[in-house]
Image 1: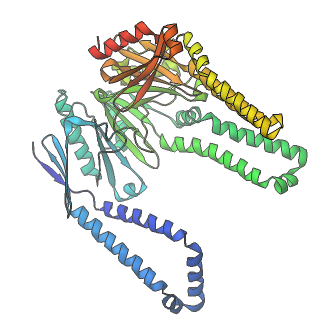
Image 2: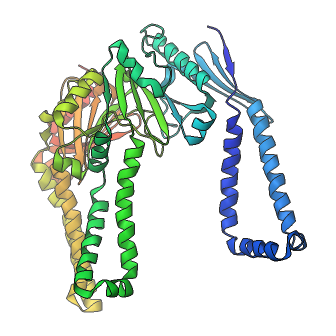
Image 3: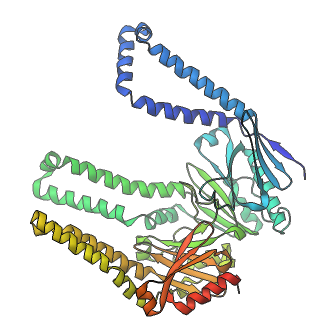
Length: 498
């Protein structure tokens, strides 16, 4: 195959310079009082004051430092090459410290594209490439920026070569869209596209919102209304202005959480093409990621408290390169009722059609007995705390703090028992867990790497065990199950899929 040798787009120079200036601005903010005085002196005495106080030298130093950073970034950009040679991607930097990073295409797990507002303005895309590496599972292995047409061609070439190595033929796993903004063109080829409307995205933002933030906001509003109703608005502003500001912040935080999710998942679109799943979403930062199905470690069905109340589910992909950095999304669906969820998963990942969340079995009832035994230590700690508080401080009401903490911890035990469950089939397992939020991990035996089984004395006496199943870049809790079933699962992991 012909070697392709490219440089990143020159705009990366100015992105680095922008990051440098962000640091400088934060440093200057720490000296804001001095800067204000200097500006006042300039306004009254003119540039002569800036020279006499030595401020001109500070400004000149900043300009020289900026020029040095600019020159350094320019030389670094000019001496760095991205080489696509046969089935290798090579990042070669020939500066004073020579660096050569080589990645085999067969080890690539994801080829993602994204662009922020600056990249939209200059007409570039950022390509993020991740590999099946445990050591770099929480960071991007390669991040490169190209002009739009070059980025699209580069990504297409990489995915075509990935497809050829998977034995599906060159280009058969890649759709014909020219860029993420034109994803809908794939519909003309008969592919079933799942596109979310603004109503769907708002619903997802609500269902996926943490319940505690909304409860705190509502509690603050109710408390403020009660205070105003009994004491009057003037007294509220006079005596509880700090509380008023806190309530405003709580409400704005709840609104922000919904707006942030809406912007993040704006125009969420997903479809299956060959052996890959393509996802596109984002308003301010457009993201497009391609997920090779054979690189998927597990699927995770999530239910925040509101989702559990309204019986909605959303699915995330557990794989290296998608959703493993701050701000990244790994969603495969928005929040959906069970029937629609099954329909989308059947179309997008039929390889996991064996997994039916309706067939998840609750963990053994004996598991609650073990949890009650485990909670004894918290009862003892709470009792000791109450005794100490009463002896040292006297008032009984002060003892409510350790009592409330004890009640909350034991509530977590109860909620974890209610969320815990499993489904075991010949292909793999569904493992359910959580507290107020619930998550169900779907994984095959082939993707399971380690099974750690725990024998708590009470559990061993009752003939049950629990544990943790380790995956490549994730883990899932095994609920309390019978010992014989745990041995059977161990054998299936050792032997792979039966």
